[in-house]
Length: 211
Image (cartoon, rainbow, N blue to C red; front, top):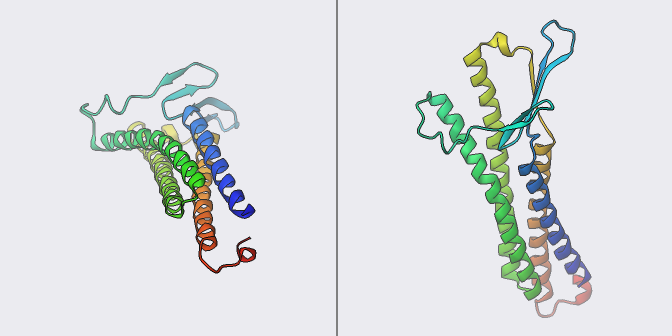
């Protein structure tokens, strides 16, 4: 059953890769990049900042923590700002939770691989697919949060103050997307392994067909 072993090993490595990528993304500060171009149209950059989930950094200066969305839940702010804070809270819960779920899924995958249990492999594969969907939801919420935050800033300070501002997403978000893809791939590999193991356990099926 060399193919089965290959599938299981690939799924385990994919889960480890998914955890490493998402951990690096959550801990880094290059999710959101903001550049202010020269107002004179010379193409220079007057201001550069990059932000993560927990803090923001301006150029080469030291980083400062972002506003704690949990501590500011009771503040008297506009409904649009309250909505932004709720989105930020959601992201700060969902993505770290995804890290925990990947670890739990890896342990379940290891146990199901050692026990050669089809139901456990199926359950773990579906678990990883759901975990990938949760990570995807967290990333989608973050993108929506970033867009709405810029819209709110334009509304607050005026369009003329943000017309020279260029925003983009950094490599931290790319790592998170790669983690999501790796997690889904691990789930698909486990489901394929469960299918292969189920076929091999059927009576009267030649091993040459399975191998």
